[in-house]
Length: 264
Image (cartoon, one colour):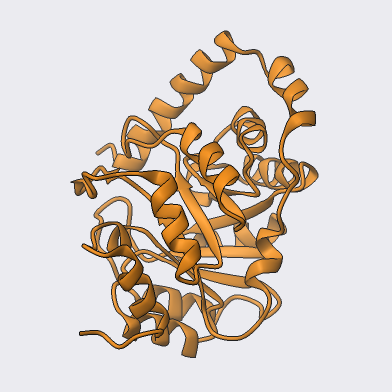
């Protein structure tokens, strides 16, 4: 049976082919000289102390549909910054998540935090797009890529000055993630085939990941207790989108997650 991830990757390859026709990669590369300077995404998360928040700007998802109807990406990003997020993730996939690369560009101009392009990256073209738009980091998903392709995209992102956040779900993919040289590793707690979420997945994986790699817990983080669980397990950062985007008051939701105020 075809999974949602398979469908997304198939659609993504068609999207890239169309983009290449409209704007060849050589033209896109020429715009790199005008891209804003790279901010240190990895360094922002590596400073020690309490668990850091990568707060996500995300309008919709395939499983939930529209998460936030009053969607103003710049306003949301500013709230994240004001309430203590360390970095910002911007969902740029349009067909499945109603995102846009333009949202990332706009946010990058309005906030001071490092910004991640959250998408399904399967081609160098998307890396160049991301850097031209102002991305400081990009997401690479092990389940979408062969060993060679994962290594190539990882190294190309680094050469452009960006931080690759290399994500996996299946435990057997951890060796591939380590082998590609990833310093920032994300563990997705959501099985993209079934959408089942298990927060303990990150905790179990932390025990198998070298201490010199920074770990990001992703998905299923809805409460302060979840943040504390990950922190106590040695997880340096958490990527949270859906919970924050669905909250009536985003700022209060960030405060509660980071322990700035108690839940009421």
